[in-house]
View 1 (cartoon, helix red, strand yellow):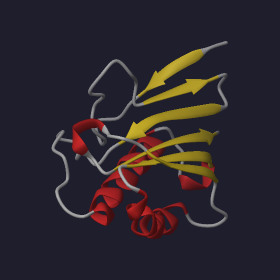
View 2 (tube, one colour; view 1 turned 120 degrees about the horizontal axis):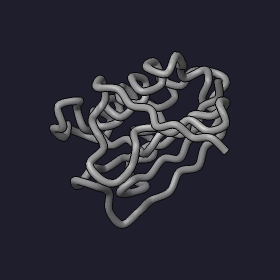
View 3 (cartoon, one colour; view 1 turned 30 degrees about the horizontal axis):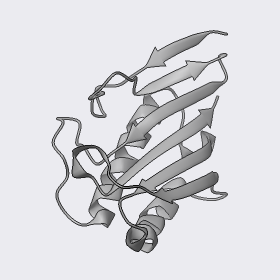
Length: 126
């Protein structure tokens, strides 16, 4: 199996031992979870909708740098600090991914890096 790391300066750099994205077998691009960091590494302040807009912008930047878009995304996983954020995140997420939306899982977790309220990871195909 071949795998190749992929990154862009238009999204925040990894803050741990992971890659922004990993291309596998030449057909799949696996994006690491994105939290609401701006490309300069600063956490977006504001409500969960503002945070989700930044997360989706980060995902878009990584996808576009690989020649892809949301139409190439086949699976997402959304991690929330509280299920109380579900409706607001769903609204912003739905506007970004378009139709038909990819398969998705959403889970609430005890905590997210840097105190974020939302993290989203995606799998895309070439």
